Image (cartoon, rainbow, N blue to C red; front, side, top):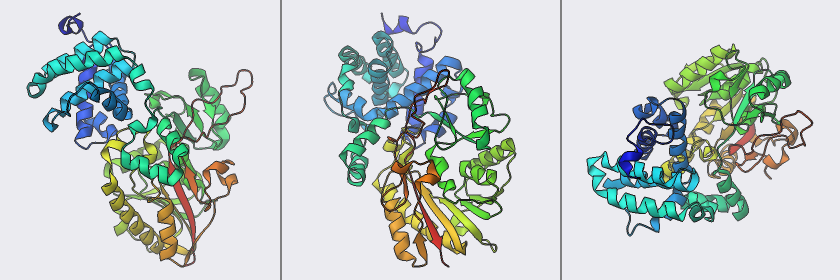
Length: 461
């Protein structure tokens, strides 16, 4: 079958050019520096898709990003020399074709033919159509076995892998990389944890794999239309990874206390604090992200004071009883959800962010009452942003002391407390209940959690 006859008709889901063209446009935006979520929102060819085509385009782009290292390794065996920078779109087309043939069970003729047609659409890479055709055919012939035996580290840039090996050892680094091959489940934090059983029963009717986590939340298989789930309209819960729900718990009983949530947007932790009865002030400089926070406050019926300001420039005459600082970071703990991160961050970003985090810790202490509690956290796997940052803060501030995390505070999850008493979660950890399900009871769906670090300090003033 020729390329023209394979794609001449209407774009049936997974068969035509439209979803593949959208996936290619998404990859181009990511290559230009956009985060995957932003690329999805900004790509017109993607927004114009509906139903299965939309899902296929998203899955295709995500698969390429999640397995880019391995895909490039396989493709490299059939390309004599790296393609020039001006031909990066041609390389993306090859990645799309390879992902379909090796990982998505797409028929070889469809993966190859649509790749050639995509190349023909752009004059600047039309000359690579023959190369794309030849390489895509060879990859399809090699089949899934060509990628199945590659080590998990193939999909991890060298600087990240070396950092994880140093920080966690070879076995844990390998487990982290393997966890990144799996799409993250959907975790929900309940406004009222006492309603967990009732909401689990309702959600399990449509999603049999739904399960309760040991942290009082719920876990489902990935869902594309979150707003259609029971409880969304009622404001009974919000989407928040199980690991991301833990730092706020380290502040203890916050009812009636004045709590500053620094770098608060998009607001999952703000909602937790408000639901726990804190007099919460949420500060962030991102207008669009604060808009999402405000929408979630309205949907859930919770209250917090929202301030649009750079945290380093913000001050308050009324100091806080407690502060939660969720500092900007490389976000390498969220790669399962954001597979673009390994290819959009580097060691230069790490150094700049570590310096910013130290500044934010120092500034946060000026906003805290003597005897108050500071929880510093990052969704990062990099020790420079976590363990090393906590150690440096203690060295800079003699009035600061570490308050160790007790496993009982985080659902008995002792594996997530490091030797210094700080919280350290990894994508390879499994936070769901692992008991044998009773008759008619849904068992846990999947596993894993975001990589998070949190340290709790008491400030003497």
